[in-house]
Length: 512
Image (cartoon, rainbow, N blue to C red; front, side, top):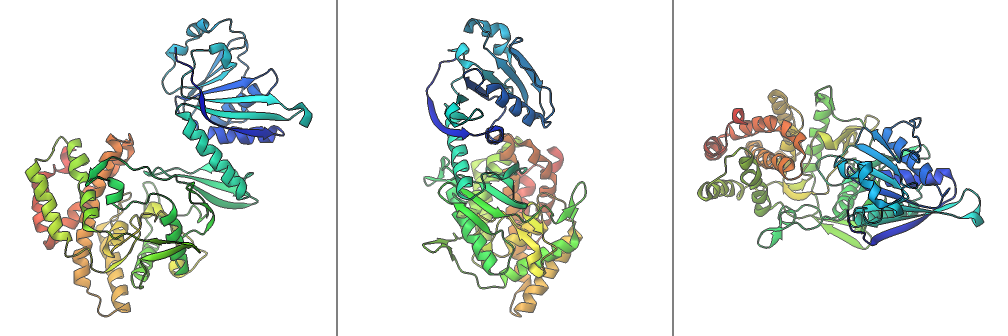
């Protein structure tokens, strides 16, 4: 039995017809997660069962799914692709004590519970739930309804976010757009493809990042590593890249305070193919040409966001590099039951500090930071460097040009054969030297190895953290690849001291 609570966030929607009800249903469906409870309130004939049937069919992925009314059986269960769902109609319930007999106490924790006539379950409803109250509006017409959507407890912020999104889409003229969730990655951002009047657009839903716990000098990890806290850096970088001939998506509508953007859709065609995916060499060549062109330009540190706002890129400083490297001892090594002593950790950081300090201010440019296959689109209708579409550059910094080269040529998500890596690196070096005869290829090759080793070390820690903290074990499958990249990078003579430390301090891959 749960205590009842007061709603802490709500909004009202006028439903003029069945299509409006279906649109509200799709909006609600977008925020439902395993274990949620949704209650449907209102008088007889107000639309509760119609909404419930539409929601169940939506989650079933089949508009013809049979959804019988549970008026007489009281409950009906569905094994849906994303989660089990129990649809309950409590109209005939004589008292809340009968709920236990219906098996509500034995539902699996992942089950979504959809309850009509929730007033019959007073005292048994969980404090965290969503309620949709339907009322008839006969003065407006026989098909008109009003719906009040209320989030209780932890559902409140989700309802606030949903309402902000609905307001934003309305202001952008996109209320009627079809919405399809795009498979997400490791970030907390949500992307949807919008279909409106025959045109595809991308919705970015990226609320302001809350500060995490302080980890060093009173600062959270995100501040030390210079990770974007809102969408302003994305807007600034998208504009800056586009003004220089690079294919970042146009920002078509923006509410920066809410963290909501509508973007140009750069399509679905990437730079890899096959199962498992592998690089398409000519597309990787275009990508490395694009980097060489970017790095050959004199780029500003401060960019316009709008006529009244500018954004200054942070520097990829020593503290940022080191806090990323500390992900290895903080997450990866404990996962292997190989924690470091304080002395070994100090040696690790000292070796990296000595290696990075003289290098991080050399050949500084815009570092897009996640320049690899998941964030690169192929635009064959364009020409030259514009054929490479760019995504996910909101964490851009001013730093070494070699970082993004290493990010591409040692792609953490796919195998880049060493022969292709060296061919593309040589292509980049030639392009830079052709544009600037003073370009020092040997110095860049050393910097490339340092950046590749730093990035691989960081990613090993990130993938372990995604598993242990964020419950996303799917990234562990990439660890063998990243480990092999790390060995390639450590083979450079300038990294011999680090190579010795890793050989002793990090268990070999065969023990994972």
